[in-house]
Length: 474
Image 1 (tube, rainbow, N blue to C red):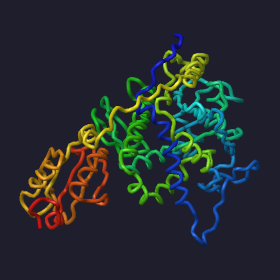
Image 2: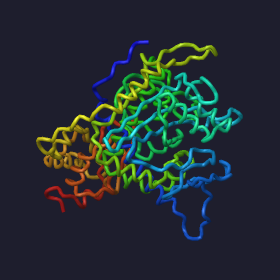
Image 3: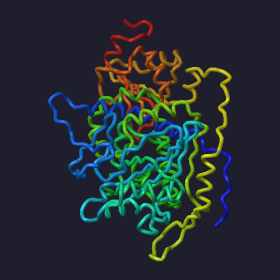
Image 4: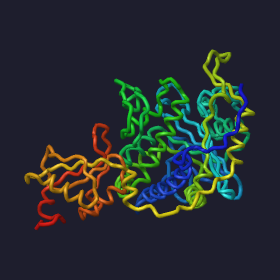
């Protein structure tokens, strides 16, 4: 294999911010979910898996998921247990994605398609993550060499201490030469729930790709054409799961990172709470059985606070790929990636040793107008009233007040109320429109529709005729 050369440059800014955003978002979302999980008076206290030294004898069918300050979100007694959080030392996390549908029938436990190891060094204000390809040929403790994505199913099937997560933590830790402290396991159904909770994710598809339009991978495949578009949860899942491209699993890893970036931008592009809060009961119901971790709520909150001031330029991401792995066929006639363990550990070591590049102080404050120019949103205004010419008149009014209208037309339906639809996440443009039209956030809806040409659509209703800030209105 070729020798590994340390990289001096870090990944693009949005990629470097993924881990920070993930920690902060997990703290916020977990707090909200915990609030929704509080029992009402008169309800029985649910069975739980405690975080203490003594494990329970509950089965996965008996254990009920919960999120409170000291308990763990786990549905199986055979899981890595509670561990004290020490922010004075480097902390290691295993982040995995799997599909529980593969467990249905007699096929046994499923495989882990996404395997990421992350580190956090609060003292040095550094963090990062490395993606491990699923076909990496690794030494699985007590079982010998296997593809690394098989470690989870082996741990589940044979009762390894800590089950599937425990064995995968030990396997990935051995590969990198570390002891992994915590795991966060997300089922693909949870991924769909999260994407749909923010009304889809915007991605720039580099080339035509075929994906399954449903989580069960049944029916006709969906053809996604190149270009920017908003993908709902099921298509976003298909986009990050498919391996049927020229780059195979490496391409899938790139798409996973691309969707994470898009999801992060969507989440932080506007005040997400008004959109998510009404959906929390359904989100909690869907996530509670599809997310596992041995981090308690209080620990997640502590992590959120600990990383809030970390310099984004001290966050680093890597993908294990050629030349530090070499594709080949093993003695079992399986396609695998043979790793150069020494070189992989060099990558991991270098990620943790790279010093942060200071962020230069801004030379001037960015104005709202400059943010709006950066968003460069296309805006359509449609007349949903019986007043002819109202859309054109309103467009002139908005343009005069700094809102760039790109399309004027008629709605296919009459509307009593005026509504604004944001399809791609344009918080600063939306802020300007609401201000000029003298509307609050209750007129705003976030939608996903790949067939919509405009980024923002304003549909004028009859209320706009009677009450608007345009000159000469009553």
